[in-house]
Image 1 (cartoon, rainbow, N blue to C red):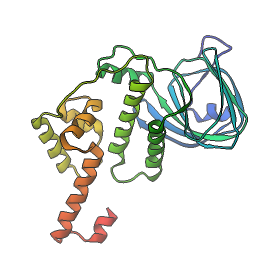
Image 2 (image 1 turned 120 degrees about the horizontal axis):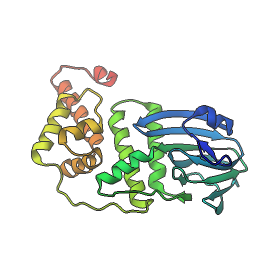
Image 3 (image 1 turned 135 degrees about the horizontal axis):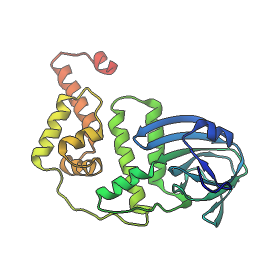
Image 4 (image 1 turned 90 degrees about the horizontal axis):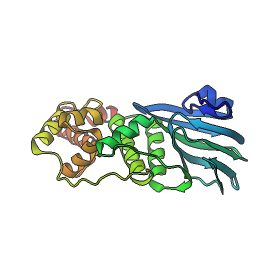
Length: 268
């Protein structure tokens, strides 16, 4: 809790706390350690000074026409007409207040600051400061949020690896564009041939299992953040795309060999 009694500490991952503020929870899932996605429908509200335990990336999904929003962040006042796809970034422990005059729906991506710090250190940044953003139009952030929401709702066929890739892209994008420090660009030619061979053999041996980015990165002995980039440089495909392609190719081979039917492939 905040040491200042006038400033409320809010945990956006708590359904009870958000309900008390006028928000109805539509979806809640843990994407990976320290990263959660929630979908809220929020009534008109006036939030007094508060701080969040997590970095918040808020993405509008449904907004009524002429919805007015005001926000004060660390004493800086801003106002706008809400738009679908607007993004608001509120860093952890940042003092802010807000009010809006119509109900709307939004995604809340909640990141433990430790996760962002960890990724920053992997790309040789000692400390990262996420910067507040208001009524931001960022097509990639919006697309990532919607893709994660859709993946959680359909939840099938290799979703774990795909979700890991989306989360990695999300944190890398935040570091690159909305932090006080910029990551160092590292030019590389991809994974070493021996490591790539080990990863591809592992994928082949476990093609029908749920694979994760951390699992594959461990085999390659690199961080998950680097692994996705190095793997694509080596194969031309993102890890989840490669796995899906291999599953399709395996199914085709089995069908040609007469070992499985089209109905069996569809069932799996």
